[in-house]
Image (cartoon, rainbow, N blue to C red; front, side, top):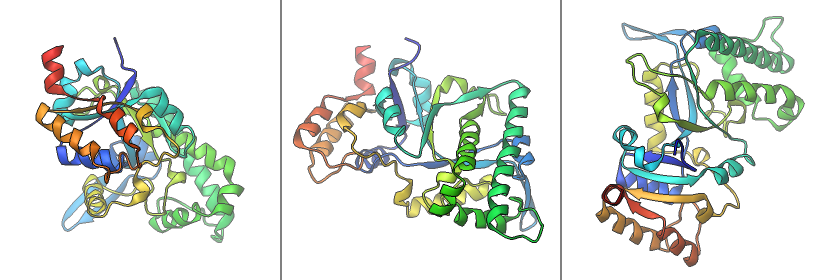
Length: 308
């Protein structure tokens, strides 16, 4: 089997795993070094921190990541991302996401420079769409609105949240979201140190920038990796509910195929955890029948390695 019918979400710590089981998946900001693609859209900015000069050539996008590697071939992936995993029915998850403002797709890995060139063109086109929206709504005395100016980016953040603006510019917003999806699902086939990304067989759910759940929870385009890391630390201290994956009217027992922990001892702990009626599962209240159904989906990598 080349791929799995499930999409697997891994994490490293048992307590974090239990938190995901109870509260649900949440979007995290992942830093992407886009190099010249970023620079062409005005995202290449020189920042000063004391005597240190930082040149920013990246972007942080709120996303949830999965892989479709068959379970028996996940050892390398587990070494990188952890021994705790929830497996979601791929088709059920695709259908559920299709009814939301999120976008889900497998990652497209780039190798040839022609793809970078096309992303640059799309980034410039997105900038033009945004300038058209802002130019039509914010008088600027003939000066073109530019996202190179942080103040203009703040204006756009607040502007795009207004229902009348979204209705008026629905077609341009649709085009921006399409461009965001191409950028957000694009990744080089290996990093600068030679690590091979292709083997991760990554899928993502992203929040398009125009569908940000609040003005301050959009894409981070004016930040160094250090600043993104600091932003993430603040998020983790008080994680906003808007960044949890909200799926309405979804049958959890249909959506979840596997719940896998590292050891058999932890498997027993998860069984007790799921049977606790005070606990929600993936942010939802479950009936006794649904909780019992989920018990059959629990196993451990320790047991899988013994059996297979």
